[in-house]
View 1 (cartoon, rainbow, N blue to C red):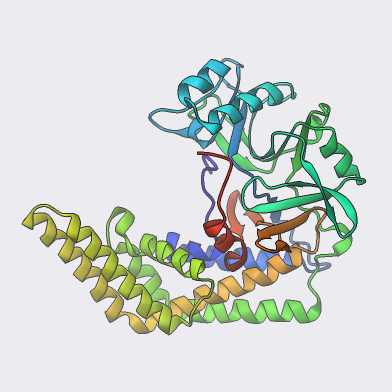
View 2 (view 1 turned 90 degrees about the vertical axis):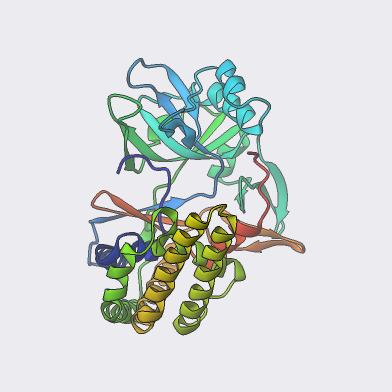
Length: 398
């Protein structure tokens, strides 16, 4: 892959890549199943933990001149990349903003680390975390984005956090001869970045310690049954999955609009049956195009968008039955993914909570990233984390 600017959900691959995405998502699930099956190996699959940090930080040495830099994902902007080599650069590129202040702190702290290439990660905190009492024990607590993390003060990791002024987790390493040609490789060896107490560098590596995340025979059977259901439904809906790729233009293709629609479903907190979801998606498409038509100033432009609306609605109505099958398969993929996530979360050294009116509610980590043959898909329980991410206010700035 080129730049790690956005990861896609496993189940969305059927809309992103059509029939190839179906094969890919199924193969990912089977490899994850094998990885969590004692004795089956699963060596082709690698998993990293997704920390809910913010903002994303890219830093390291410019491969052309060796200068140390920091930035957000805007480092990869095609027309106006925002690369910070000095505090003056931060003030110029982010005048008066919280992000500018964050990047100046990162520049000061991260430049002390022996980073030789270019790394990408997520900022966790930029002052020593405060302490809270949790079940009668002292814990460091920090909330970089949506999830609140807690770490026992008296633990080895707690000692590391208590001595630090800035915390960051690196998950991606880049190689290339120029900033424009950098290519991402998932996973970052942070073992050599542990020598500065004021900077706590966390690892994203997932390790199935003692096989604690292995599937039991019953759990493996449930995963297999759900994968088989996905294969059956996606095969029945294959004509829809293939044909839908050609309907619409730009951000108004049906696959792109389905992802927008499904984020709306996630916000509501419940995934309806495929029959209802397909009906609601048609209504969503109609409203989306009507809103765009209302913005047009000329009769010609309005007519063009009315034609595009008619094409989309006709395709959905004509293919309603196979769309049901495709959406059933989509839901099967989500179900199998959540089964895998629930096992991966058995390995947990850090407390994860959501802040609510009555205090902290325990939750799973943000999710995981599955990496296979150089490709990566994210494993997130969308009804848990994604819904919270849509609704919890962010305070790290814009």
